[in-house]
Amino acid sequence: MRKKYGKDKTNDKLANFRHRDLIKYTKKDGENYVGYITALYPAKKQVNITTLDGQILKRYGINRCQLMWRFNKIYWW
Image (tube, helix red, strand yellow):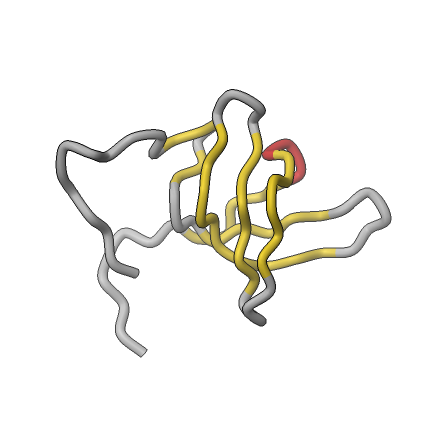
């Protein structure tokens, strides 16, 4: 994953989750999604998640997320 550094870096952390973290989200009915965070909304404690299948989940609560992996290097595939 690639990161941009600069003056326009805002909202990069929410409840120990960061932009582009790989997470597992569990819905109330027990359904699980694995994906990475693409947007953070700190005012409402919500995130956008893009799953590994390419599905986009918008405005899901941060309380049901579990951190699986934090990208701290550049990966090529």
